Image (cartoon, rainbow over all chains, first blue to last red; front, side):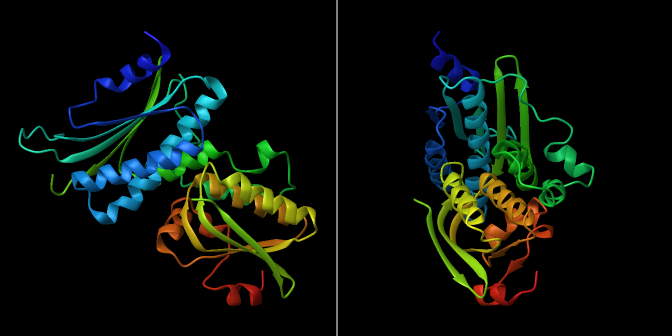
Length: 183
Length: 113
C-alpha cells in the first residue's frame, strides 16, 4: 500500500456511498478549496444556512492544522478530508448529521494541556497569552506570532460543539459534526 | 481570492485597508506588510477589516504579531470591524480584550490608545 492509499485508508471506514473525499498535497493554497467544497456539500445535504460560516471556518482551521503538521513532519503525504451526511442516531431513516473528518499522518499531535478546551476550562484564552506576550519586545518570526496551531485549536474548540480530536500511531484526525435539517 | 492591501497615513496613524480572505495562504502577505511598516517607523497602525470576507487563526496570529511589534516601540494597533462573522472569531479567542476595535476608520483615527 502506498502512502496515499494508506492515508485514505485511515478514514475509509467512515465513508459511505454519499461521502465526498478530498485528498490534497499539504499546500496552504489548497485549504481554500477544501473550505469551498465543505460549504457546498454542507448546503447540499441540508445544513442550515446560518451554520455554513461555521462549517467554512472550522474545516479551514482543521485543514490548516493538518497542512502545518504535514509540512513539518511528512510533506510528501496528502491530507485527507471526508465529508458525509450520516445517520448518527441510527434511526435507519434519514441522515441527520453532516460529519467532516480531516485526517493527518502525524502521530502524537493531540493538543497538550494548555491547548484548546483544556485552556478554556482553566478560564484561560489564547488572548490572555497573546496579550501578555504583546507587551514584550518583538522576537523571531517563529516566536512573535502566537503559535498558529494553538490558536487554531482555540478557534475550533470555541466554535464547534461536536468536535473530536484524536491521535494514534498512524496519524490523527479532527472530526466535526453539524445537524442536518432536511436531507 | 487574493488578499488586497492598501496603506495611507492619516492624523499620525497608518491605515492598512485589507480586502479578501486572510487565511493560511494569504496571511504571510499581511505579515510582510505589517513588518515593513514597523520597519519604516510606522508604529501607530489601524487595520481596516471591513472588506475582509474570511479570517482564520493564521490571520489572528499575524495581527497579534503586528501588535507585539508596534508595542515594542510604544505603538498601537487598532482594528476597524463591524462584521459579526469576523468579530465572532475575536470573541471566541478572547482577542476582543487585546485589540481595540472601532466601528469606523474615522472613529479609529481619533481614538486615544
